[in-house]
Image 1: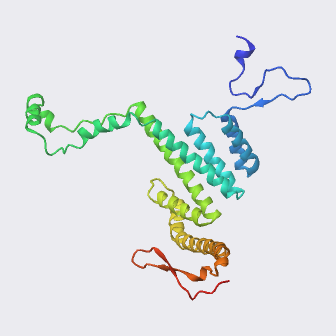
Image 2: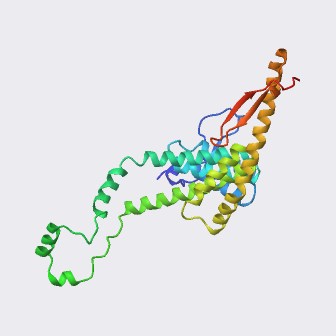
Image 3: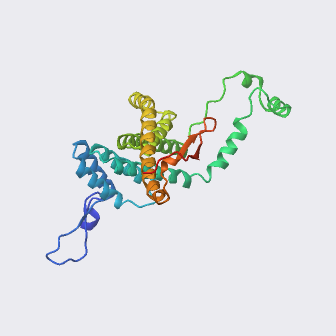
Amino acid sequence: MSDKDKAPTNTKEVSQKEKPDDEPEVVKFSPEEEAADANSLFTSKDYHNALSRYDDAIASCPNYLHYERAVLQSNIAACHLKIEQWKEAIKAASDALDGLAKLETESSPNDPKADTKEDDTSNKPETKATEEDDEVEEEIVSSGAARSAPMPAPEPTPEQVALENRKADILRIRTKALLRRARARSEAGGWSNLAGAEEDYRTLSQMPGLTPADQRTVRTQLKALPPRTKAAQEAEMSEMWGKLRSLGDGILKPFGLSTNNFQMVKDEKTGGYSMNFTQGGSSS
């Protein structure tokens, strides 16, 4: 066996291309090694260097590995939260959620048929057997066997176990990404972000497997966010209307008019608005 064959597979790989003497060798890490280093840095609260490692890991992670990339992106969001970079945390968490959605979309084409077959049999009530079923049972089942205990459920196949484990993993990462995006949106503020945070927390409230601490966070935020969202909406609408008035006054001034000549009237039945013109408005 050559020395090359004896080298461990998890060692750091050094580029073998010839380089000028004054150019440093580039040390390359696998995504797994980068992520492991990043996890250690995150645990030691070195968030900036952890973020750099996670960025390196995702840069070398193939685009088709949606789950692995989602894990890294969720961790990137966690780093941004720690250093209060809310906008970047929102993007990273959203990328993680988008990747998980792609993963489920690409792995689901064969599922509907399987689900249909299972539903065809499992949805039949056991207490309403057909006459043909009764006849078959009488012919092939002895009276002793009929009185014996029911057959135990079959053991799940390795493929079924792997599928269930993957579903659990996806749910876990989706939960983390949603929690991180919701918090980042809440911290970032603004009408759009706060409304998005509300939506994320409502989604989380319907998801299984939340820890008691996360459940408390969701309940607390769903109470605190609506008034914040409404206040932000009113503030932004007021600001927007102020800018529109300034623009309108500039346009109407040559005609001896101003926005005071126009009044917005709310229809209490529909919630819509209509504009009325009044001669009494003074020009500015």
